[in-house]
Image (cartoon, rainbow, N blue to C red; front, side, top):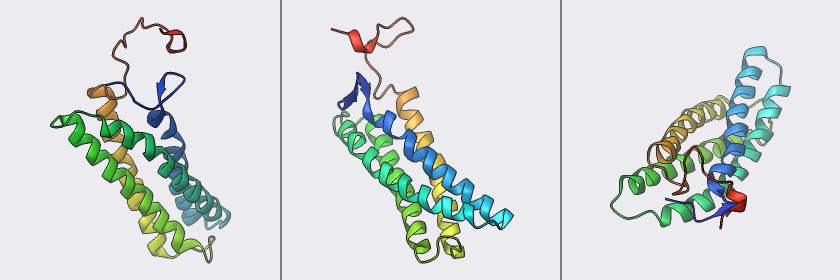
Length: 157
């Protein structure tokens, strides 16, 4: 199924998710780096990465929801897409809850904030697997004429 929301001929949701994936994964990495080294600047970096990752994550959900809406009912893709959406929303909300707990002192987050970030990181891996299942296994958001010799998407009729 071809994506309904496109940028220069490509599905918008797969393009946009790269930013929150990178920001949230690195937020967790910086959080753990700060925890291991004791250098508080890494916890500060994690704080801002979480905020940017959540905002970009929420933005990436909009075109994903449009694409999901147009998946045919009763298909495996519709069910997997729903699971992907629920886990994606949960992922962003776990990181946002972690961010909220850090607001008063980003360099010294409570343990609960770190636990929420770890749970968010695990959920991030799961949402990525389900997204990969949709695109790579089922061809969701892939142009119907996709092939190794497909024409350039900018110059299609």
